[in-house]
Amino acid sequence: MAVAIDCDPARLDRERIYQYLSGESYWARGLPREVFERSLAHSLCFGAYADDGQLIGFARAITDRATFAYLADVFVLDGWQGQGIGKRLVAAAMAHPDLAGLRRMMLATADAHGLYAQYGFTALNRPERMMERLDQDVYLRQAAGGDAQAVLG
Image (cartoon, rainbow, N blue to C red; front, side):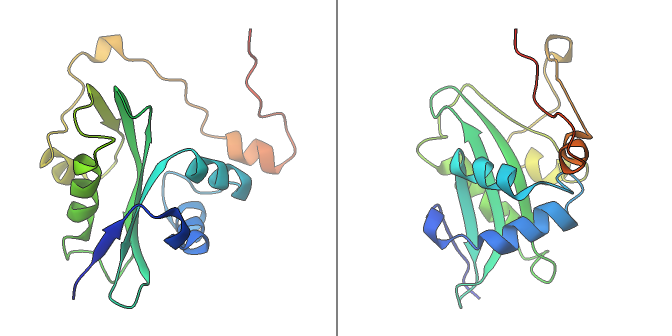
């Protein structure tokens, strides 16, 4: 079976992607729909499609398209895993002209270190220089009507 990968936003099965991310993934469970839509609108998205046009995998890059990118939301649907589709998605992202030649590309994963290592990803070179601001419960507070806005100052 041939698998096509492209970056056409009109072709993305947004409902299936949203269902997976908000309900099946470990990293975005509870993702509000409006946040999901904004994330796609402001990212370079890759869809993997079966011969019949059905979306079977997805990845997106958050990037300035010049110096930095963060590879996120990479998944392959059950039933399609183990066929190299995840590898093809990552390879397509790495080869995209807007992402090739970047100084730094990052990602986070709980269970796919081996996949990403094949494309040159390693543990942080200087973790003492890296910081994060992580709010694991932001979507829960939003759903409950709490204030989820960051204080800017």
